[in-house]
Length: 414
Image (cartoon, rainbow, N blue to C red; front, side):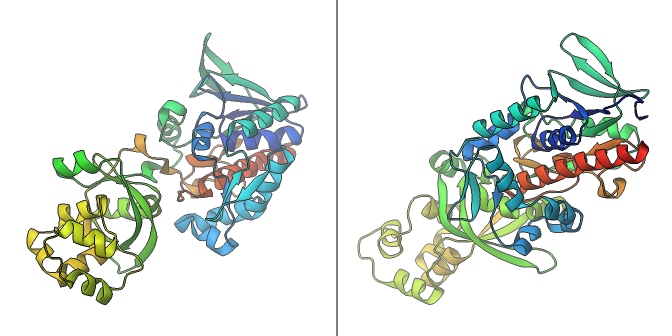
C-alpha cells in the first residue's frame, strides 16, 4: 500500500476486538486517522462474552510462569508481553477508570466483574481521539490496493496507507470471529497454519445411563494427570464438568492443546483422574477395606471417603463390577481412574483457536513481509494459551505492537 501524500496518514483497522481496539488506540495517539471496521452490528462482541464470567483480564503470577503459558510461541510473544504485560494492562484499565483486583487464584478481574463498563469507556476515549467506527462491514479482501467490504449499503472500496488485520480466530463465529479471512490470506500466498480448537472440551462416549444422570455436573476437587508419547507428564488439580458428549471446563482446557495434538496423532488421548486428592493410596485402601455391613458400596464410599454422586458414577462407568469387590483395585482406580478421550469438540464450540498467520511470515513489527503496510494482531496469529487471562493479555499486547509497528513503518516512508 502506498502512503497518501496528505497528512495525517489514514489507517484501516479491521476487527473490533481487544487487539483491533488497542491498535486503534496506539494509532490515534500517534496522530493517524483511524477507521475501524467490524462485520458485527457493534464492537467487542466476544470481549463482552468473556465478561460473562467476570472478565479475567490477565494474571498476576511471576513473569517466568506467565510467559511459560504460551508454550511453543513464548519466544515470539515475549517481546510483545515485555512491552505491554499484566502490570501495564492493569495500569491501562485504571487509566480508563476501571479498578482491578487479584482473585484468590491469582487471576485479575475488574472490581465490577463486568466487561461492559470498560468497553464503553474505551470506545468513548477512541471516539474522542478521532477514531471512526464502521460496523456491519465484512472484509472481503483486496481489489487492487483497495480494501473491499460488504457493507449495509452494498460493496465498497476503501483506500488506506496501512491496515491492521485483527480478525480473530475461528471460534464463536456468531460473535464475529469466523475465520473467513484464512482463504483471503492464503490466496495472497501468506502462510497460515490451519485453525484448530483450543481451550475446548473432548468427547468420551458415555453410556446413556451416565449421560442422562450426570451431564452438567461438576467434578471437583480432582487431579488430572496426563503423560504424552515422549513420557512428559503433568498433574494439576482443579475441576471440570461432565457434558452430554464428554468433558469440558478449566482443568480440561489447561491440557487441551496436548490432548488435541495427541488425538490428532493417534486417535485418542488417555488421562487419569485422582478422585480423592489429599488421600494417599495406603490409607484409601485401608478405609475401603473396612467392614461395610449391609451398606451398599456407594454408601460405604460416601461414608468412609466422602465420594458420592458424579465421582461414584465415574467409577461405575469405567470399572468392571469385580473391581468394586477388591479394595486394592478400587483404591488404585480412585487414585488414577483411566479416561480415554476420543475427539476434540468442534472449533465453533471452543473458547479460542490455535493456528493462524505464521510468525515467520511477519517481521518484528507484525507486518506481513510479503505485503508491506499490512499488519496482523490478536488471535489470528499462530499462537494459543490457556484460559486465565493469558489470551486477552496477548491480544492487547499484539494489538499495541501492531499499532506501534504501523506508526514506525509510516514514519520510515515519509
